[in-house]
Image (cartoon, rainbow, N blue to C red; front, side, top):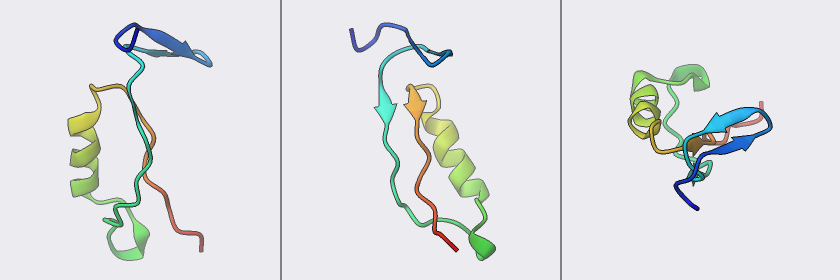
Length: 58
C-alpha cells in the first residue's frame, strides 16, 4: 500500500511517501532560497511528496 500510486486533490503521486516540512534554516541573505537548498530537494524529489521547509514571518 505504501508504494501504490495515489491521487491527492488532483495531484498524482507515484507512492504514499511524504517528507514532512523541516526547519533547516539554510536560506541565504534576505531569506532567499539558495542553490544548495534546490539541490537538497532535487535529490529527494523522486521519493514522493515533499512539503518544503518552514519560513520566517516578517
